[in-house]
Length: 129
Image (cartoon, rainbow, N blue to C red; front, side, top):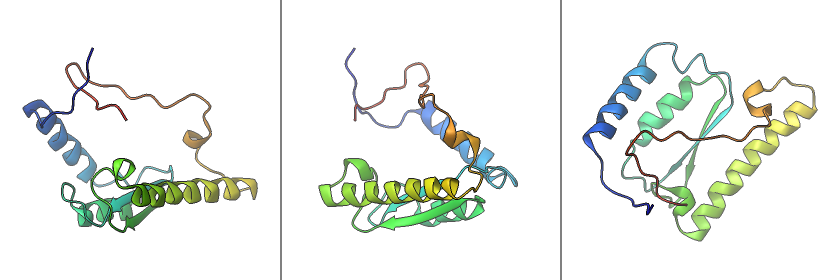
């Protein structure tokens, strides 16, 4: 079947509000041990950068970085922005690997061998990367 990128649906909006409410609960983000890198484009117009940074600060192992000139989808942005974002991801993962090699316990989630899978709800469409 053909894939398409469309607008926001009422179902998507309702799910987004439920997700926001769940993440705003005290302890929801604070209990996540897995290291998280949050990248935000400096020219982001869809997500509130301050809210993303606040959420990242609540993560025990969270790191927030701003990508100069980036927009909403950093990996679909201009080549220099995409390269900057990928470089940041690489450095983040390399630093975790170094910490592990030096004997630091890194959260088990990062060490699993099985691939990450995304589950889309019925009717939801994902634009091909």
